[in-house]
Image (cartoon, rainbow, N blue to C red; front, side, top):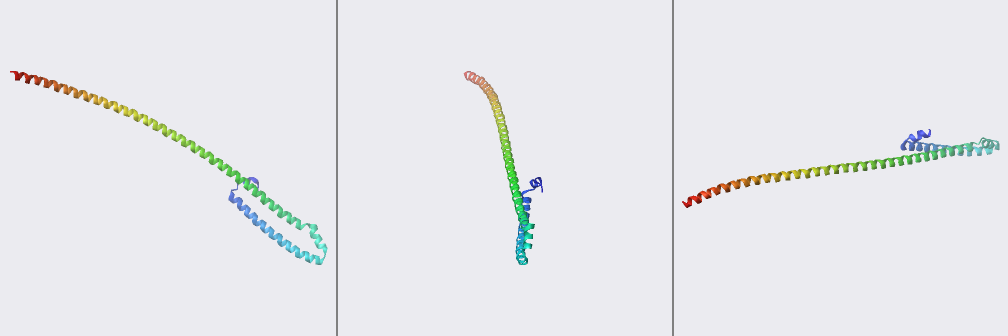
Length: 174
């Protein structure tokens, strides 16, 4: 599996690969132990049979090859684990960075929305104030017109009664 393919795997898949490799490692260790036990029993038999067989096994390097293979397998698992850890750390850092950017964007949008709401409130307040001023001016005009009408009527009433008073006063003299 290439490094690119490993990077594309998610954490779950990587952990499953590691678990599978762990199982394979345990199986190899078990086989190695069984081989060692078998070898020991053979060595005893070979010692009894003669030293040529033991020398042949040592010359062929069966033990060294098995040890090297298991060591290489363990090193590969450690490297894979390190790569997976690095990939996870990188993805976590990217996620945190993205979350930070998103929070900043949301905060900016909130500030913009609050500013817009405040501007609308200020405009509505100004409109309301103007409307109140218009209503007050209309009320003053209406009151002034009403007062003038009342004044006219009172003046008319007064003048009418003055004429009546004069007539009454004139009749009383006769």
